Amino acid sequence: MMNLVILDAASIGKDLDYSGFSQFGALTIYDKTTPGEIADRVRNADVLILNKVRLSRAVLAEAKKLRLICEAATGFDNIDLEYCREKGIAVCNVVGYSTQSVAQLTVAMALSLISKLNVYRSFVASGDYSKSGKPNLLEPVYHEIAGKTWGILGYGNIGKQVGKVAEALGCRVIVHKRTPVDDAKCVSLEELCRQSDILSIHTPLNDGTRNLLNGDRIALLKQDCIVINVARGAVADENALAEAVLQGKIGGLGVDVYSQEPFPEEHPFAKIKDLPNVLLTPHMAWGAYETRVRLLEEMVENARAFFAGELRSRVDKM
Image (cartoon, rainbow, N blue to C red; front, side, top):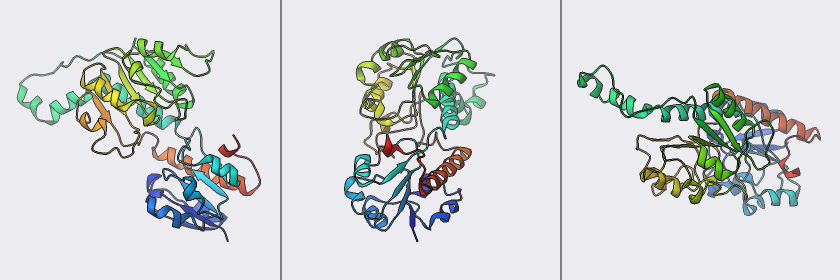
């Protein structure tokens, strides 16, 4: 009988039913797996299911029986793909499952930051509104989103959905994409930075996108620009973003992803996390319940296709 091991079920959701994988063999579920536990837990696995656990060459060398890795995400930079190719280990990811959820959080962040909701909510929650004797508060000044320019860095499924919502809200949408397309106003990355009132990042992390939004490009942003990163932390220079906030060189920052997760106390965002124009969330944009159910169904289907001899979502064949 084959052994299937889920290494970090807690990062996918304890509220999901993983029994669909049991049709392929004996299923073992771990809520989380520390680096020191990985080698032992993969040693007898025929199939690994994981979300965030890093599978290095050294770790994979311990998995002599391994035939298939099911990544519970679109990105697979946590897996040594070259080693998998060398050893004939199949690797499947899932694409398109989180489009609605990530787009929803992106827009929610933009609306919250442009409307200064953190400040206004705190004014009421603190009791200051009741004590003020004033019927309303209109400071700090906030602006309508209609008529603003929304720049989208990365124009895949999520970027396109964000663009649709932004247009519905009355924004002018511009896009930077490695390969320009006809159905969007495509500009250079530098021009995207110069023109955007809101800049949201939706590009995958790879050698070409690492530190793509670097310090020089951040310096091109408008002083009131709102930056939102829901892609990968390392796509942007986190130090430069934090400094831009502290020095008042951008208007607001919303981030759901970090180069280290969770980010440590010495991370540059630790010193800005409580500021009223900063909105940091714990890598939850992808995780609406409906999204996670869809993700799990797709992973089970990837496993079924593999054992049926079909090529489906095979990133090791790219």
